[in-house]
View 1 (cartoon, rainbow, N blue to C red):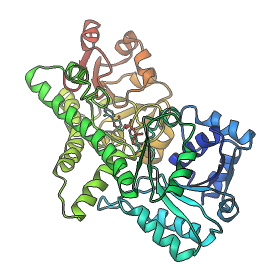
View 2: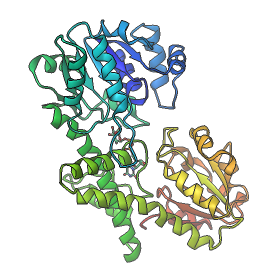
View 3: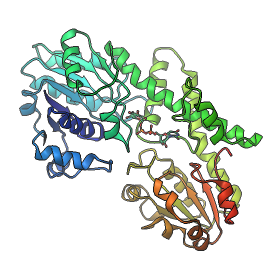
View 4: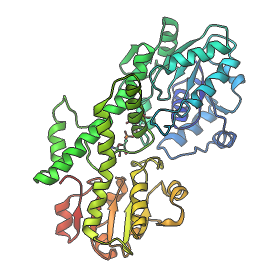
Length: 428
Ligand code: UGA
């Protein structure tokens, strides 16, 4: 099939490249000419495992083309995938201006029957609004569909190629047949719904996963008061197949461009319909509180932070990405700096993006080891695998005081204390 992907950001680039890999002919467009030029030469604008190789392979086989010209590729496309961003407004509401701009342009340039599929995360009712905008600009036949994506940053290519499910929201057989053909090679349950249900499944899934995280974080806080170990509690809960062990890792709370935005957006949508979604309000509050409870551990241990040297490992909102959007590391570091500490930070991929936000407020270190030199404390914020490889002897010999405060429960406390390192983690 011929596919036009509108928006070559995270969702668009991963989906477009993977659909090309599955045998479709893909055109990826973006209004950002600089981005398109660099994509044409195989350079991807963010770090995502496996993606760069796949982009280059599909450029070479001419399965994927990057362009800024919508009209030319639109008249060849069977389906258009809308993959533009839906950033949050101050109110928590999703800002749909990029979606509507893209759709208006599509409507003005359509010349034949096409299915317009939304992949971006959008509030319930958006597909119907898209339909109206296209109808205003185009008199011919077309359909809309909603096929939300469930990719995680850091494992997006794997998630795309091995999905748990595909949700296909349509209004008629013709759109359903084409949407099914698009996903034909992906072997997993395919759930057919109406447009509104498909849109809701995406929000409900993200909100539920965020709820699991806030739940286990509250359990962790209680564990600390009663002498229980949250890691074992999560394991014990997760063995119950009705609960499952995924997303029960306690820590400093969730960040990133999806959960914080989507939970607030669903809470807002529910409120607008007259239903106050109480549970989600608490999920957000617990998540906001969790980072400051962690910060208190640093303060309690070091008492005064003025002129203390703090090594920080991990800046991205999670491992295997360079994304620092809503990364809790940024909040914690800003507070450390405000309290007078000298921060020496290290992250395998996210240093450049962090520097754009924090500038020269902190010192950026080339290695995890280097950040440890002369530090009064090591604070772990993101659980990159490579941190597990650092030798305990190095930690002890390089630091001024061998103290680790770990927001991701990466290490075994008993092992560290047997080496003379004080170790404080979350919920144990
Ligand atoms: C999330 C969803 O997992 C994807 O299914 C969805 O497609 C995506 O949002 C989206 O809407 O586009 P992502 O934000 O990439 O994916 O990352 P996650 O792996 O879900 O992690 C989100 C945050 O929760 C991270 O800060 C992570 O550290 C935190 N987390 C995750 C925990 O604190 N504990 C856990 O047990 C799991």
